[in-house]
Image (tube, rainbow, N blue to C red; front, side, top):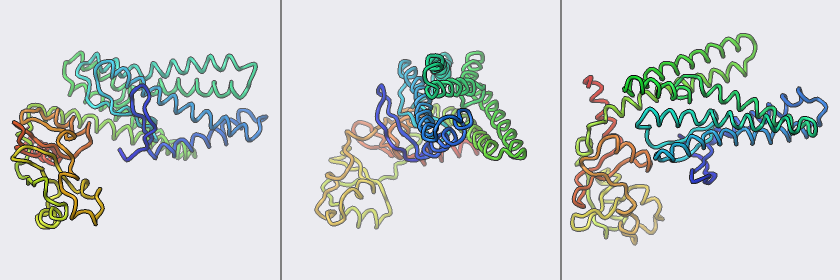
Length: 372
């Protein structure tokens, strides 16, 4: 995902906003304040239309956040790690670092989101009834949010991966067959079918003159299709990595440097001279840290000559380290969790290799070409 803005933490889960979220927030606010509420309640003032439209948009995205937060809290309760929740143009997504290892866990995590949306819909339905005779604007707000959250729950239960309904379907097929890859393929194909249906409906609406609605359905269909394909490929990748160890994937072609070397010498003699970008810092053969272009760029150019590698490097205690016999899926999880491009492979406190994302991709490509 692209860089996003961090809002903070809710119940221990980091919440981010992708820049694309601003587009859909503005679109929904404009639609509610400029079209929906004026058409439904023409007696209101223009300012009231826009105020209720703005508040409703915020509460709608609060509902989406609650939906994803429910997924996250259920995942955490079942022992999973949740990296963050990101709100973006198509709603929200909870970044869970590892796929569920049992069908029951997948089912529980998936069903939690739609159930939370139904509960939110029921809450706003009661809100609507309470304010129906006392405040028309508040009643209108509750009516819309009850309706949209009910629609959100129903849409998410469509049995197409990666929607919640697709994950429920995958959990059921997985439980019946005991085969995660087969279950993911079934759910992915169903998701692609739903995506093509949405695209077809969108095209029909465009030809019928409903250009904006049709274009929106096409975008959603395209997104679902891409996500369904990626989800299946991710499971295939996990299957191919199972059984591969770090020592099978790592490269021994790395360079070590001493911590007391200056950054100026590192740049001139090693980076510019040998075209390397990352170095292992050792002391008497033992891992002390790693230094790369990112670390160097944090130091002002005029201070390179007086700054040692040890002062600028990422120290050992901050590095994510793997052992030679770590499984390929553990490696992939570590790379994903820390969002790093490479990991040192350490045995008896000595670096025996470096594992980069490129090493994994090349090995997967080779195995695919050989039909393994």
